[in-house]
Amino acid sequence: MSESANNAPVVLDIRGLTKKFPLEDGRFLTACDNISLRVYKGQTLGIIGESGCGKSTLVRTILQLHPATSGEVIYNGENLLEATGEKRRQNRRRIQMVFQDPTAAFNPKMKIKDILCEPLRNFGLIKSRDVDAKAAELLRMVELPEDFKDRYPHSMSGGQRQRVGIARALALEPEVIVCDEATSALDVSVQKTVCELLIKLQREKNIAYMFICHDLGLVDLMCKQVAVMYLGNVVELIEGRRISEACRHPYTRALLKVVFKIDFARGEKIEPLAGEIPSPVELPPGCPFQTRCPQCMDVCRRQKPALREVEPGCHVACHLYS
Ligand code: SF4
Image (tube, rainbow, N blue to C red):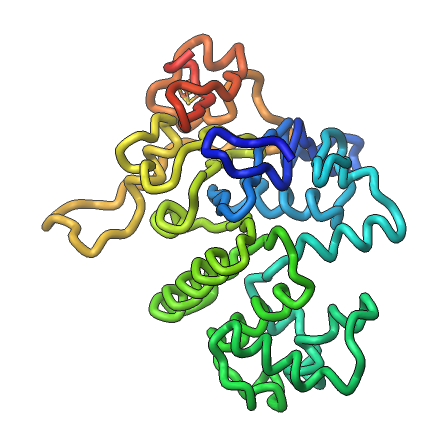
């Protein structure tokens, strides 16, 4: 594993990952365009952007739920995307996922203990006589009462089910957990406790998270690094907790303006982004944000800006900073 600037080893090195979906008329929808990111051990990489920006496709391509069009995802010195058969299965053991709606991922007829231990059974890592004890241990990890193991998913609240989803992801002791909008469906107070739980588990187990979210305030708090995506591109990569003072890209700044605050001044308005979003099937040449950018210049319509480091820890893809 290579070392990062902050001395944490890289666990996932995503290099030039592109995903295009073929359409019936022969054209292609580009969901992710040449994305390079690193996920560091024990740290959280946040991925943020509007619906349809490609953030979920990115993680699903990393997890080989969609075949990549091109690019590499290096894990333990090997390209995950080339793994097949048993090797691919073993890789999946080390990279787990927590979904937005755990209920949809659970069999409603299974007890919580069986849901929790199903991944271990799939890998032949548990005997039937050990299921109760292991389920109790996993429930303790996510701060749920042990006797929940004999419940069914429908008899739990949304926050409790999401804790079960996290416990299930922990069962195989992964190095990376992908949280795909894992807190988005929860009430704000429940969201806070689930985020606190994720942070606590990360400290205890040194797990890396990829945290997919559309709440800029939340990723800023949760993440060591935040990648901002727009129309399949990473337009800014910035340290968490520095977004409000250090972000540069016009899209990130526009997102900041629409973050809901409880201290809005009287008469202050939320200003939605103006301009049309181009079709991902027919992206114009140049900057993907040009149709909504108030600072668009001629060069922006001709040349696509590359993601460049503009100060330590801050990368931006914008001609204003070329
Ligand atoms: Fe705006 Fe141009 Fe920067 Fe794109 S490259 S964000 S259009 S200024």
